[in-house]
Structure formats: structure tokens, C-alpha cells
Length: 323
Image (cartoon, rainbow, N blue to C red; front, side, top):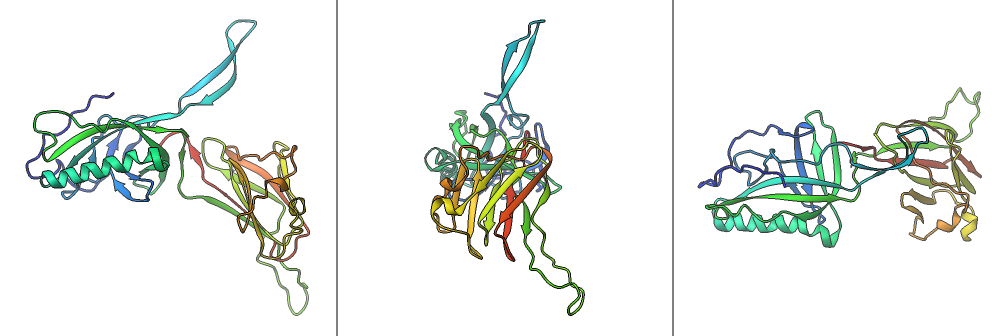
């Protein structure tokens, strides 16, 4: 556990320092941090304005750097070893917090509420730790409380203030951009070029598309198909992987105009617009729900039985090694 030095317990309830500038955090420089608990309540962690009652003790923050990997190796006949597989490991983030109040009652209420905000992740699902940079960029990671919300047990503490060095466990070690990137492709309606005057459809034509993943690791996108369509095939041109959705395989028949199906690639899930499970509509066992590697990915969308209004929407959140 990192050793931290907390400021002396204030008699007035005012934190040391001041101003609303970002706090310098190890491994990422100046940044602001927030924690969103499973109920959706947002807790500012780096606000050091004069009226703040929770803020981060930057010395001691750790676990924001590159992901740790477990390497599977095979001995090389000429000496050394050859890497067979690299498995990303769960991440632990250490985050020291200082909590205070104008009096003991106010401090205790805040201390207890913050403890509940973290520990409820063990019962209600993960919370989100988010790091925002001065340029507006944001990255977040899903966290579960592990330990550390205990206080300093020093003379003078737990009267108006106390500090806790909490450990947050992350089952997915990668940081995620909270703003999804989207790609939309739609069939345009046919029209005469000469009558009554030259026209060009503003819709994008389904077919070959280049999708760019700006992140550090593979992302697993979500697809939304809008009818009309009788069958939809998604192909990653670079790897040759593909999968096909056939609405007739689940007894629905062709998708009609406006009807929608959503396909999630991780975990595999296919849902019709009313929530029905359409996982049987994929062309198992040959279906491969492929991901988007870092960089450019050439993909193809093929909709059989499409017409005006047929569309494919692709959505994904880039993932990163560091905060």
C-alpha cells in the first residue's frame, strides 16, 4: 500500500490549497477525475475549491499506466523462448481520498455516503472512474471496490476530516472513451438523373467501408440493422472473417421497412426491436463476430432484399492502455 502524507486536520473544514485547476496525477499529468457510482451519482474527486469536501491526495495514486500482461511462452530450440500468447490481466487502481466537513456531523455524513458509493459496486455492478484532460479528452474505466476505506487512525483524525487509500479492482483493464464513434450506411432511393432536373441522393450507399479504430486495442462493435432486408452479411475484408444474419432462420421472415435488429459482438447477443432473442439467426457454426483492430479496417456490408431506407449503423468505443 503506498504511503501518503495527508494534510493536518483543519479546524475550519477548509481544504489546503485552492483554485479549480486540474490536479497533477502520476502517469498522466494534470487532469480532473470523477467517480460515478452504480446509481448514476457523480462524485468529483479532484475539485480543490474552497467549498470542496472531497479531493484526491495526488501522491499515492497508481495503476493508471499500461496494462499488465501474463505471457505464455514456448521454449525456442535455438535458445530463449517464443511468445505464444499475451493475456491482459485485471487492473488494480490505488486512489487516496481526503474527506472533510464543517463539523463532525457533516464530515461523518459525507464519509459514510462516499463509503457506500464505492462498496455498493460489489452488490449493484461497477462504478466508473473517469479522467478528463484539459483538452477535453476523457477516458474511463469500470471499477469495483476492493479495500482501503478505513481512515488514518491518527490523533485528531475522524473529527472534522480523514483520509482513505482505496483500492479499485477493474475486471477489464482497458480505459474506454465514453463518447462512441459511429458509422452509418443507408440505401438511397432510385431517381432519374434527367427528370425533372439532375438530382443526387444524399444517402450513403451500402458496400465497402473503411472503419478506423483510433484506440490501442481491438474493440468489439455493436451493429444495428434497419429493414427492409432479407439477409445481412458483415465481412472484415482484411481477415476474411464474416457473419450473416437471416431473419427467416428465427421464423420472422424478411425485415420490413423500419424494423430493427441489434447485434452485439462482445458478448455475442442478437436482439430484435421488441427484445426477442435472435441469436439463432446467425449462420452458426461458421459465424465469426469479428472486432476492429487498431488502425484502419476495411469492411463490407451486404444487405439482400434492401431498398430505400435499408441501413446499417456501427457503434464502438475506442479502448486504450492508459488513462
